[in-house]
Length: 219
Image 1 (cartoon, helix red, strand yellow):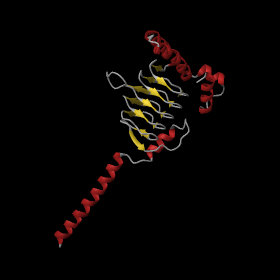
Image 2: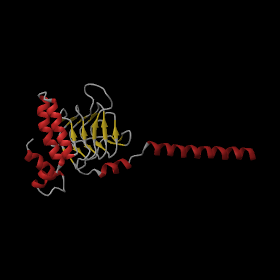
Image 3: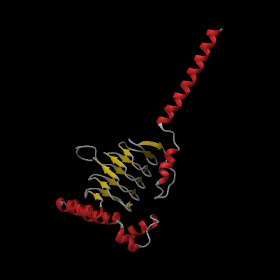
Image 4: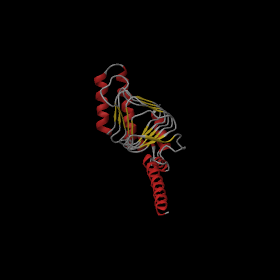
């Protein structure tokens, strides 16, 4: 994708963007992706040290760490971006949105594919971690602060630690309507709420049984 296309994507998706010049000069997410294009070119040609050095310079300048081995699709938008980490074997589809503090990382010292694969149009909220060789399908939404360690089918919304699916199909959201992820999750009953309801039902049943026993004793 050309620089012009990337700038137009950010301008279309981010209401805070006032001009192309502002995006070019002041958006670290764009800078990190441009650096990654260069480091990835050297990495694919086995110039590993130079590739890592370029990615290191990018991390120092932008606060975003993208391993040169990561595969990134078209129109990735890293919003703000400070603290974002994308691992070596991570794969990212098209039109993905990552907020600040997101980690696409591994879970140990395993070899081979050890980082997640994200489908198209995935949104990962601020501070969330997606860990291991798992796959998030197209249109998945991950709530802020969540930790996802299992694959998620397309269209689902995931929240919590560990991440749990609270909607099997994500409602249609604009790319930056991140706050509505938490709102939609709150509308779904949690395991704890279901357990509390069950306890109340059992307490009511016990109370009825006790009253019945007392009535029988008096009779």
